[in-house]
Each structure stands twice: as structure tokens, then as C-alpha cells.
Amino acid sequence: MIEIYKCLIKTITESDKQQIVTAIGRAGEEITARSSVQHVGFHSTPKEGDIGVIVADGDNITMIASFDSAGDRPDDLADTTTIYESKDNYVKITDSGKITVANANNKIILKSNGDIELGEGSLKALVTDNLIDFLNTMTLPVVIATLTAGPLITPLVKSQYTTTKTKAV
Image 1 (cartoon, rainbow, N blue to C red):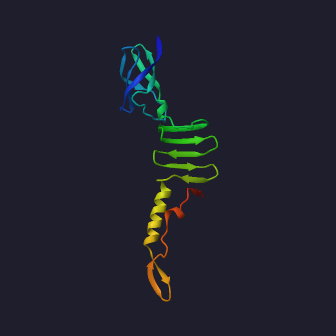
Image 2 (cartoon, one colour; image 1 turned 135 degrees about the horizontal axis):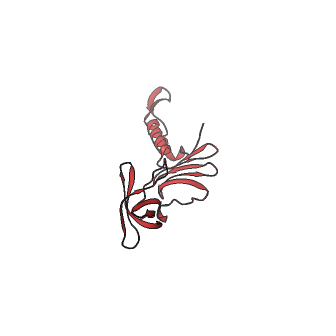
């Protein structure tokens, strides 16, 4: 007789190109060294404490699905297709075609109109900081009565020359 029931995942290990599950099943039952079924072409690793779904046919036991904890899910998932590892690490695609790639420190948004928004700590900040530093150290000719070499008269300030929008070409 085939049985389907929930389990509490204790460990997941990768072995011989498959996931091996150790979990707590029904009262007093420990499920050890059993395989976990995954969708073809897709890989994810449930965390300790997540809930799994077990299919058992006698001693043939396999975990066929897992549910993550609500605390790991990113906010605002309605009308999206989202791949995520945790609340802060995700790739989200909306019905309107907007794609957001995010981790705890950075966010890049590709809008359906071609605009690209880059968050703090991302490529925008790297380019802006490095470009301002480079320009502030350049020596350019300055004409005041005679031609002399010196630094830029007014140093650039990051807040005057930053943007969060870039138009894709």
C-alpha cells in the first residue's frame, strides 16, 4: 500500500549526483539515506527544519517535495515567477516583464521599457566611485594668464553625479 505523509527534514546531502535525505517521519520514525526527487533541470536544497512530502511503498521511501519556511520567502510574490534561496537572494519575473535580481546588498531591476535600475553597492556605485576618483586625480591644463598644469579646479562630488537609471541600448 502506498502512503503519503509529511516529514521534518534533518539533513540533505549531495551524493552520487542525487540528494540524500535524513528526516523525521511519523511518531518515532527516522527516515535515513533516502533519495529526494527533483524536477529535471532544476536543483534546490531544502534546509534543516523544512517540511518534506514522503511517498512510501513498503520499504521504498522517497521524498517527492519540500516546503520552505515562511521566513525564507521573499515579499511580494503575487503575479511573479521567482527563484529564491532566501528572503534576500532571489530572481523575480513579473507578468509585466520586469526582472529583478537581488541579494542582501544589491538589486538590479530590468524594466520592460528597457530601463535598468542599479541599487547601491552595485555596478553603478563601483563605476561612479572609480570614475570620480580617476577624474579627481587627473592633471589638466588650466589657463589663468599662462598655461599651467594642476588638478581640476572644483573636485567632483559623488552626490552631484549619480543616477539609479540607465537606458539599455
